[in-house]
Image (cartoon, rainbow, N blue to C red; front, top):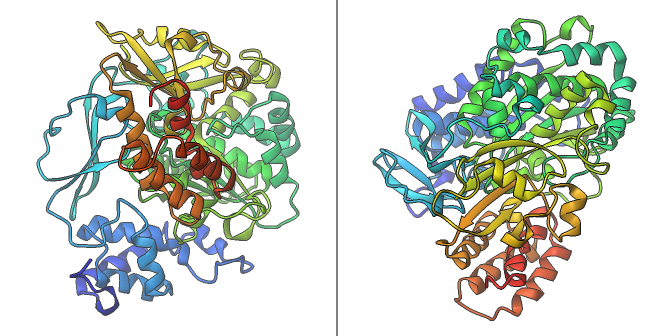
Length: 566
């Protein structure tokens, strides 16, 4: 940035007004939630630094970039050192730290969008490439940023424009979406919304914890950790301050299920997070939504407002006598913030770099307090467990992997979309229910689990999509992404794109990931080294990286080598 000097910037009248207006918004500095964050002086909460990221977004949306003067005005108001704030602002892909063009188009060129000729999507402007935008049920997608006009997503459809439910009669998580969605509280209530909260209030914390443990629900974000164990750990903490967080930073290439849930069924997430808060003893909840999900952000914000006005959020939730409120945080375009401790750092107003574990968030999480973090699909499952009871809920799926699972099908599949299947359904059945490979094409390979997953050959369509089935096949369900490649695809190019993805998304905090992902990218691209070096990089990154990004960065490359792709 040779022409921009952040140390000398003085705010203009306009920049000062933007910051002042931001701080006056009730949901920000004067929001009861923001005030409660500071009670008792928890770790790092010595001011209102946690408002830094939304403040940066206020500048970005208003003037098109985080200008030196605007950043100084924000830092003066929040009490954050300018150098630290600059480090945060430049950490995120979507935040501009230099004057932008009139129209900036970040066009996806990741593993699904790269398969199709996308044209210009009807938008003219300066174009740069982008990692996956979570719009993989379309043939092309881009983030469009215009100074003073905010951020928008544009797409070009290749298949189904709405999510597809594999078995409508047996749908659980997608049942409201299959019937047209429920984006207002009236619609949500008309189809049984908030009855799970009524059950939760009636049976109390111990009853909810017991139901979740009996259900055998495991996390749907990729790690598959037992959900009941997480909830119990936070509930048992003696701390007077606790938090619950919905991790909606869905950034795994090929994954878009959480986006569909938030766009079409936002109150389900609000209700589930409220139940989580009341159950573990937290009166503050947070939803961290990836910055590219502009419609999800708008729908969730609207749902929270309606929940407030109808008594389902606030000082007395649904007449329970218990308070619970929700704050929304919008990410800035950083895949690593999907890792739970990096997400905590981001909310607190720091660079989204993972923390070493232990301690774990359940004991030392947001602002140093016990914190429950679940992804969107996991939380929405809680509603169904309370509706049906744990025995009925686990009557589908397998013994080790009960319940249903959402799968995101994209690429050369006849009907791209989100599909719900009982855990243990074979990969071939899931592909068949999506119409199989697109007409006139022949299946070459399937990518299961996104960039952090692995290749599956046509001879492996019998693999059961359960935790134990995938494990026995040497695979991982990951985030539920299923990307289909026909015979026309140059698979080594796909591998090279994934290697580039991890090199770009590494936060750089630890040496194994920072150096390993770069070297892996160079070798896969054929620029240096030999393929045998990849084995050493694989072992070092997997064993030594601080977080899951580095630990999984070589999984697809390893899979490609095992199958002879590279």
